[in-house]
Length: 183
Image (cartoon, rainbow, N blue to C red; front, side, top):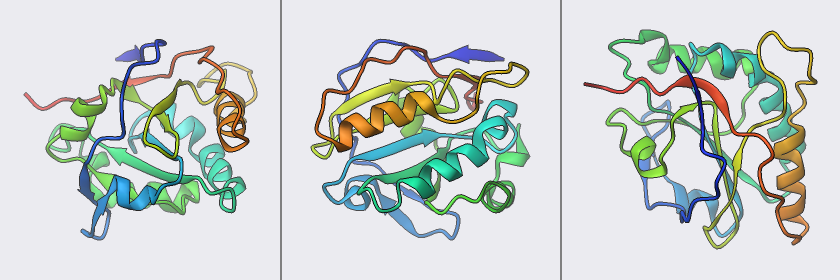
């Protein structure tokens, strides 16, 4: 089901969450950020909206490798109902998308609920103090439209943050498949 994230900037601090990566190693978000800005992306292997931008997101990460920006993806979907979003599927996604950042597994859906994530993809950009500065779309593209799939909106927000300028308000909400909640 198609869902849009809220456009309003919610008062959110980077939560003290620890989740396993695809090897089972625990990753604590604040420790991983290590006083750097951090981008947290809620993603899913089966979602066509994530598949649409996954390679461009991999390029975004590559372009920001030396820019002091930490990046993590989190999968929170119910894997019993959506087995493609289990660890094996996520590993496949990392390979095909060229992601070189941790992909975390939120099996109990605590991170998704704490963040207020509603869809995949859902983007949360925090500054180096852990304050949310951007929640919005990657760019104006989506499966089936002809807009450039280049991450322009997220790039604009990240560039402002990394240059110590005010981060522009999101001009478009994130849009994608709903988080697949456990019952």
